[in-house]
Amino acid sequence: MELFLWCLLGLLLAGYFALAGYDYGVGLLLRVFGRDEPGRRRVLGSFGPFFLGNEVWLVAAVGLLFGAFPLLEGKVFKQNYLVVVAMLVGLVAFTAAVQLRSRRPGAGRGGWDLLIVGGAVVTTGSWGVFFGNLVRGLPATGPVPVADPFSVLWGLGFLALFALHGAVFLTVRGDAELAAKAGRLVRRLLPVVAGFVVVVAGWLGLSSQIMSTVDRVWPAVLVLVAAAVALVVVWRGSPRVALGGTMTLAVLPVVLVGTLRFPYLLLSLDFEQAAASPGTLRLLTFVAVPTVAVVVLVQWLTWRANRRPISDRSLLHF
Image (cartoon, rainbow, N blue to C red; front, side):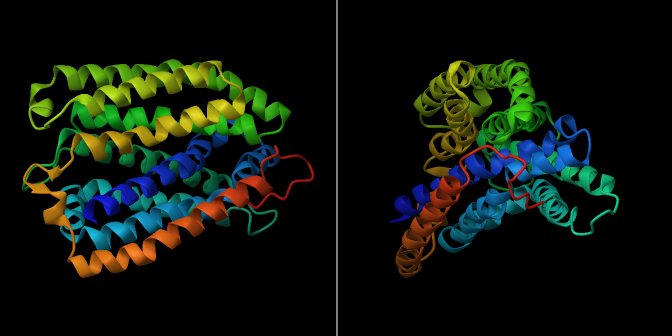
């Protein structure tokens, strides 16, 4: 049962990065594509119908982590305290600014726009540092680095990855002019993300300190192959196919951490030791499975209802 809930936690985090990832990516690019107020409203309107639904995946994932693996939650968050605090500040700033910027018609919105971009940068970069630390492996005690070269690499890599994800999303949901601009940016960002993948692969391959703490290397190899295929799909595929490619790229860090560090989530703690009592796990399974099914269904219905690009007649939620 611990293994099933571990996989379910991975599914929820994967859904969050695949879907909310383009929200942050569009936020990063807001001032690049939105040169004036109508343009910025169109940019934000592209993810308007999906915005709050995408955040549900993170709420569900955190709830499952707290309930199913309380010891892991305590240790991981404690050792990444500064990163988690920065992530939450960025997330709150981004979410609030997106929803509040258009509440007062005619009011100045430059400050809200800067808060959207800044919140997206902080949230995305923090997630990158957080996952970089998980890939490196958390020590049994003590905090982890937040500004060493490996952490900075992952932070910058996540910024490039989510910006690419947001740009590809705009090629699907943007109007003709916006989609054309986004397509040109995709071609510029693609080599940057490919470089991030290559550097991480080389770093892991050459770092005896990291690889000596894992029992197997095949997860890293499979993730590298999947990333290469996804990059080719983004490069050669149609906009909707390319969006599937960037979604795949966005979830691969979750797959890498969940398999590379399994079963020792920390260097001295395996996932069975981190799990709650059997009774609690049974209750969580009973509640979590139908909840996840409802989330997936609602997400699919939302996408089905808003699958066409935005136009002058589209409802702009923000």
